[in-house]
Amino acid sequence: MQNTMTAALRHMNDLPGPRPWPLAGNLPQIRPTRIHQDVEAWARQYGPLFRMTFGRTPLLVVADHELVSAVLRDRPDGFRRPAVTASVSDEMGGRPGVFMAEGAAWRDQRRMVMAALAPHAVKAYFPSLVKVALRLHKHWQQAARDGSAIDLTEDLKRYSTDIVAGLAFGAEVNTVEGGEDVIQRHLDVVLPAVARRSIAPFPYWRYVKLPQDRRLDVHLLALNQAIDALVTAARTRLAAEPARREHPANLLEAMICAADEGGSGVTDDAVAGNVATMLLAGEDTTSNTLAWMLYLLQHNPAAMRQARDEVLRVAPDPDKLTIEQVDALDYLDACAQEAMRLKPVAPFIPLEALRDSAVGDVRVPKGGLVWCVMRNHSVSESHVPDAAAFQPERWLRRGEGAINKHVSMPFGAGLRTCPGRYLALLEIKIAAAMLLSSFSIESIDTEDGQQPEELMAFTMSPIGLRMRLQHGEAAG
Image (cartoon, rainbow, N blue to C red; front, side):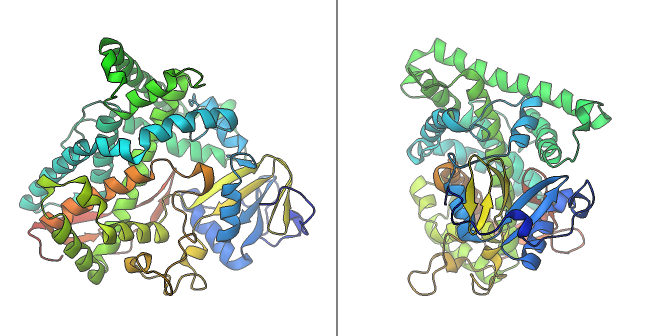
């Protein structure tokens, strides 16, 4: 990434792009819940570098994976999340978690979060992950006996939420078997509102509150109260049992201990912000990736047979699952990578330049906005052979025929790569191994049998997936 203007040959105004409307720009041409698909279609039409406009604000759209990687690797010094997103988050009472933090605050929090989510730390909590997976196993056994359809996305959200609540925060909940998911119920309202307000042409809510805005205020208050209660409970446990500081029992306790170290620069507000971040990262992203992966496996029988054969060979008994077995599920890991290539739950990343820069041969002034398209080259025949096909084995090839692993960046790139990637892949492989070792999948489909639509809120999720199971290991 160049940080000077000398090599930049073009201005954003010189680029092709969709014709903007007066005042509104290209916003009237965008469907908010399909915004990723609309911008991807423009990338196919106008090329890897083009211009679009939100209201009167121009954005440089970057759909070349090498340029996207260079922009992402120029964080946190060269680019940040857009100030408008931070402003929306702040006015909604957002805490300064590592997701939104910038500069020195981000560096302080990054150390804390990396320590809490390092592979060796996550492995220590492995029995908790298996416990939740076995709870899901029991729930799906009942569904198989009853012959009832499973709301796949919702069940996987509960699975991920239970892991985050138990493993990360020491809060024993059981949403899989019908317990109330209080915090996630609030996040389901708050997170789409952040995404919606970030692209609004006018911040009307600062002047008049519609019913949806008043409803949002109620959820924001309840969410912050619930998060404060989690932090307070963890501090109470640490005060009552000082020995826990040597061996924290969950990720929240580990974050608090890291924050309390001299010179950490991290406050309880920052810890609370990272609680919200982990709730998001531990639920929506993981559950949606897992739902897409299972759908793609079910509709690719050869891949399903290979995944099941590996599970039955390496990890046949979910009651006796070990971390070594899960780490050895290489084909299942490749299935997750291939699902994230085709169905990334973060299909775009908007950023703001912190200095005069150049992206390719286009100058980006300080304060200029860049829209990184994460799914363009990764599904292009020019970069991935048979790009539309679900072929997990492409991730296991070495040498000639191996995929360029940088063409797909589901966890980002550079210093701000997602710190929870190991935990996410572990959750995905545990749930998939449990499912494939114990059940025959009769179907995973929408009610009308059509390919599930992609819904873009804060993350990209499948709409309406239903799963039917039978007992036994025969291929579904």
